[in-house]
Image 1 (cartoon, rainbow, N blue to C red):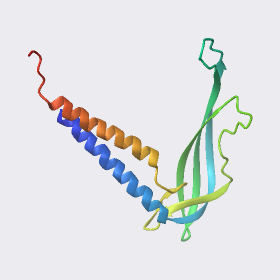
Image 2 (image 1 turned 90 degrees about the vertical axis):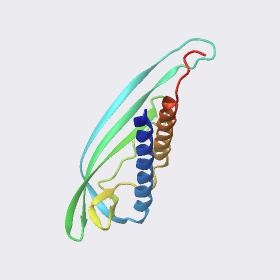
Image 3 (image 1 turned 180 degrees about the horizontal axis):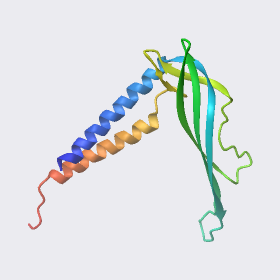
Image 4 (image 1 turned 180 degrees about the vertical axis):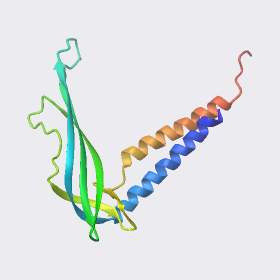
Length: 154
């Protein structure tokens, strides 16, 4: 299966590109942005008791998903951007805080050569890159394993 190895190599190239883009954001210009609109969704799951030796009860949890639209101005021209934020926490926590609130005005970072490209947070997404590399190497290994001739009897 040649396609597995090709898919693995493509995923590794994608992770390298993500690393390069994340690294380049460290040099992007900051600018003030205003939140234009936001949609938030809260998903809750109540806890339930589990009995048994060595088994802990499920306390429950919540996930909040926020879609934020913002506007920023560079050299007198207005641009729009969108970012999504996830937050997971336990319902049993006394300090239950679903998501860090963004005030109506916050900093975004734009690419100086193309101001239409912006990010709400700059930096290298190490976790995403690591996950992509694991999948890429897994597909390459699976492809090489599938290409080997199999001995059915003998």
